[in-house]
Image 1: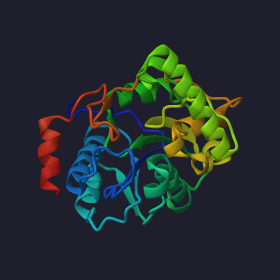
Image 2: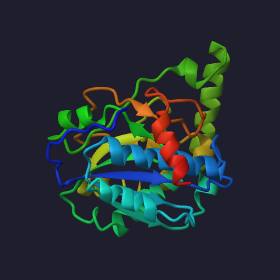
Image 3: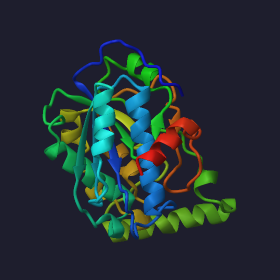
Image 4: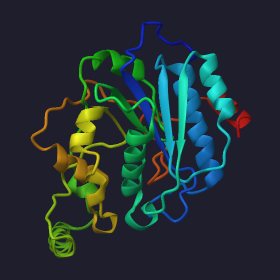
Amino acid sequence: MTDNINNEVWDSNEILLITATIDAKKTPYVAINNTKERLFEYLCSLIAWIKLTSIKTIVFCENSNTDYNFDNIIELAESHEKTLEILKFNEKSSQRYGKGYGEGKILEFAMFNSKYLNKNNVNFYKITGRGFIKNFEEIRKLHIDKPNVFNAPSFNLNAYYDRSSFNKLLYWFIFEVKFAIKTKRFHNPRYTITTRFYKSNVNFFKENLLDSYKKVYDQWGYYLEHTYYDSLIGKSFSPFLIEPQIVGRCGTSAVLLNGGDYTDDIKRLAKVYM
């Protein structure tokens, strides 16, 4: 990653929305729960988006109501002729229902409280907090005329259930029965929409995905990725034409994603802002 960006005019109707939880507390299925470590990675993400892309408006929405002062980061954005809006609120339900539920609450809060996401003709890219898209400029150009872009990844049953063939099928059957009894609905864990990074029109999102998080039931294996898939059945959207190269670590497993880690210069600057 270098500090070089394309000088083409950014579409003013496209915004970046970053979802964040700096203090994860006891949210289940979160591998990285050290508050300082999470803050550091969020700062890496913000700095990368500010310095390495041509996007003009960034909305950072955080749901643990952190007392961190973002003024210096806002000044950094302004020095790069960009607008950084910080939204903070306190939301505890994710500790009960899971991180997908918490992310849904963040998106809901952002839709109704951001100064920049309050128009239905606005399109936004959403990235989960501590990540950065290394090939974002190329992705932006390829999808400039596509308002809704979501990926539905292929499914590997062997990866989903690490069991012998018979036990795998038996476990799946028992799981489905329990889920149906508990939630009064069926679902197929094979089908998901990637929620880490996508593009959506505000009006499309409000009509089809805004309330999807309310169906999340992490403890029964029904994640935000499943609710998005179910909500988008029959709806018009496009897949990404190239694979997003996501920099940073997965919050669930703490392993590096396909884009690798942040560069040393980004990390050094993030430490300055800690």
